[in-house]
Amino acid sequence: MSVFKGNSVLLLLVLVLFSLQHGTDSLGKPFEYYQLVMRWPKAVCYHKPDEPYRCVMEADRVPLRFTLHGMWASNWINVGDGIDCDEAGTPFQIDEMIKQKTLQEQLKQSWPTLLDNYPTDMKFWQHEYDKHGQCSQDTTTQTEYFSRAHKLWQELQAVYQAFADEKIVPAADKTYTYTQLEQAIGKRFGSNWKVVILCRKVNLSPGGRGPKQILLLLHEIVFCFDNKATEKKSCNRKTNCENAKTITFIN
Image (tube, rainbow, N blue to C red; front, side, top):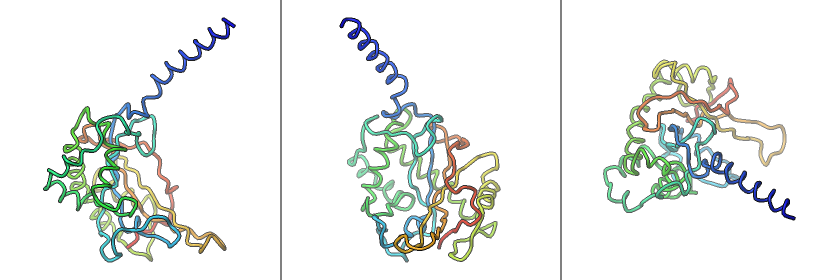
């Protein structure tokens, strides 16, 4: 019996040590860099009747510019949608944001909500900060976080012109390759800065019947920066576009 208790204590000690070394991601650590995720609103709002979330605006009011999905605290080990910042710092302070009238107006342009799961801009900003932003509080305040994201968005709006310069324009009847999109971005921002293009796959087969028809939409572009959001870093996450040759830049 004493041997069993001894083994149990040893096992518990091992589990505690493992959680201290490897469990920090649940508390948003280590935070090493940001993924600034820009999305194409027309792709986000391209919905079929059976999809759960709807666009919060009429089709003719959907912005024809890239907007922010978020600025996600990340680390180099766990490649994907950033680390989970829940409970890693002070949650979103609505009162603080309410004081920032100018910043709010800026974010309504750069970081608007698009889907009705977050029906207001404030709820969307709160969700994004609580999930992806609060674990960056060692390097930036809440206001600095949103201000910096907006400034980067302004600088990266040139991606639309980068596409236009290569005759890549929004259209339902045109498709482009991943390489075309990637090279257009590289010409504008530097080919040594690796960014990641993400696609949205839409099944056009009604009710899932008949041969599957997949429409591949240009959905998001991920730009990576250091943990102060000042220095460019090459992203190391993978695309879900699978080097596709038929990506639609929907209008």
